[in-house]
Image (tube, rainbow, N blue to C red):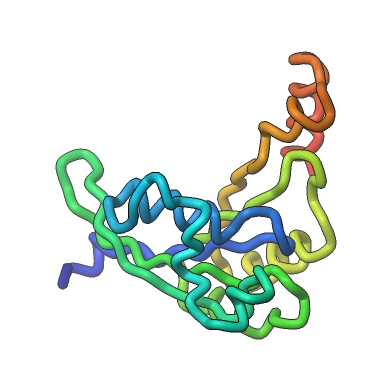
Length: 160
């Protein structure tokens, strides 16, 4: 992957516990880098012992994977960032190294203060954001919403 036009640098940002590292695991499983059965449990990018003990991302971590699109192979450099406000410096540094970010929002909790902070940081650094609404299953299992209520809830999250 020596051609810059085939390289994409992406970050994953969100409020704490909205599912950044779990999403990263699933992307890695999709790329064949980890087992699909372990995706979401392995927390591959939380490799530090303290991160594993506390169950939170403390340090930004990166991984590279190849993705084929329209017959061309792209190198995707992915940075999983911390969600806790105390580790915001890693998020800021990551914003300076990426082309775009996946902004993960929990469907039940919606946009939280740290979501707004990381989105502002991305826009300040001219990084293109993409919204990923996560944990949609919680709307059914926990809140027991009807399809109409779910649609209204998702429209609210997207609008925020």
